[in-house]
Length: 192
Image (tube, rainbow, N blue to C red; front, side, top):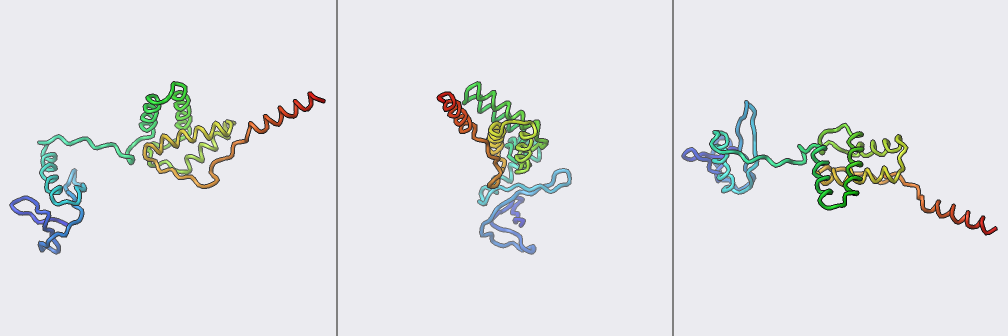
């Protein structure tokens, strides 16, 4: 809804409904302007004072008198490569060199198998592709699972909404129990 202007300034307490000024009972305020022929809108909050303060600032930015603040990078625009770089930076600062090297290797493997560019485009199918790639490459299932966990930590930390279903995780064979059985059998055979 457009607001009424008094003396060239918007008055957020009054809105126009069918061309008639009406008292506003609150709501959300937006600034609207045109750039290159396209209508742009920006939410400026729910307080009339905040909306009134945002208006001259936006006019100054549009006139070139005020330098706009850089827009923060959102999850919608974050690239997978930028998310990986941030995650590895944090790992390098908080974990051992061996962990950093292993995570970097795991995320490089993920990047080799993921053709997507933006973090929010990732979904369950990308995780399934990684499980399939690990199997095709003949990787141990525990290795594949570890690589997928590292990828999930990095991408969820960057804002990806990756939801898996029950049964998506392939079971890793329990190597310790078969190793123990072989050891017991050899020990029993040696005693005979």
